[in-house]
Image 1: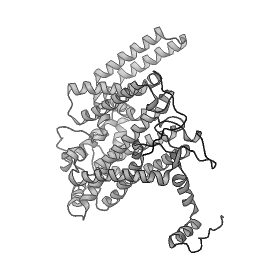
Image 2: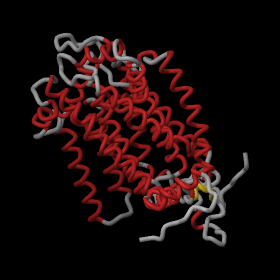
Image 3: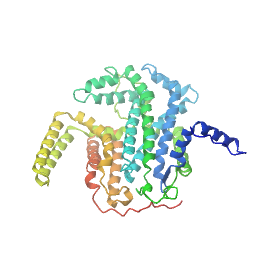
Image 4: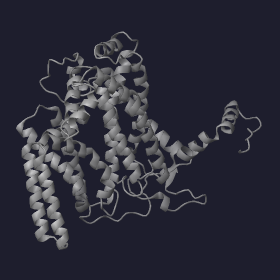
Length: 468
């Protein structure tokens, strides 16, 4: 047991209290030093680096508001919608809590998408941060599950029919699909059993997993150190006499103050939406979700919330025509590789066999199944990003200039897919979504090839920092 520290003679009450606590709970103070006051982060962080702390803030908002909502919510198909109306109309400040939670769901995805994009452009998924990225992608996956299950709870028209459509997608999985969909619903149609299942997962199971992944994400990050816009490892750079990196500064107080400023700006926008536009034009809260769920009346157009719409577009874009195009692409690629490839004969034969097997599978299973595969694969492929990027440099700053246009087109297509997912299906919309889907997967699957092209710029030995 460590020796007790003594407060200096004449110390203030605050110092004495902190000394008393440190003697009795030294682990907490050690953790504070490791992760805050003695954790050295690169001194050239820019504003892209505030979204991680904002995501943590929104997580706290969602947990706190969720606790108060659960106090009054009834997870019963006959009472759920009325209980939400009761919260909105009769519970003191209930409308504020509900709007904070609904706006917080969209805010969570906004800051997480921006946080992931920052990691994408600065190469924060590259060695030695592969595990940090994997934990982050797992958080994103859990967040999607949490949002989907929470979306059913108000038991409005779009909640009910959105859940009906998404759960039925699992039935498209060969062999186990119908039983899997039945297990998720708990009944042959979305009903009270489904609501109770989703409520328990939304309130207890998924948040516990989410909190564990967030802790693992932060611990893994602080073990290897933060990346920076230059992609320079400050731990490998020059250090002072105490072994502290010269290109780093303590996270507290430098970046806590920096993040507090970002938090203030975020809360200004967040509260403005809550008080003046909580529905945000129908994107955050949809008109149809203010109508009680009616199993006998299908809405004219069913679409998920905006943060799911890029993947929903990919699902709708996977038609029989697109599957036939993919069959042609696989066949042509296999023939060209066989004729022009520089690898051995056995490898060529194996390639042809693999291509034939893939074409067989594409034709055997229907487009609905492949749509589910595409929608899920659009998220799963993110986990493999550390091994797909073969660029000799991490940061976009030192990659060839045309790489920036590739990333820009990727973002544009992602936003277009999101917009098309909200709109009713059309022939032109489907064609654009198919092009966007092919570009999305091409961006990642061809990354081992295109990320090596072009001449990179020299990476500095130390970070570029300009005081501001």
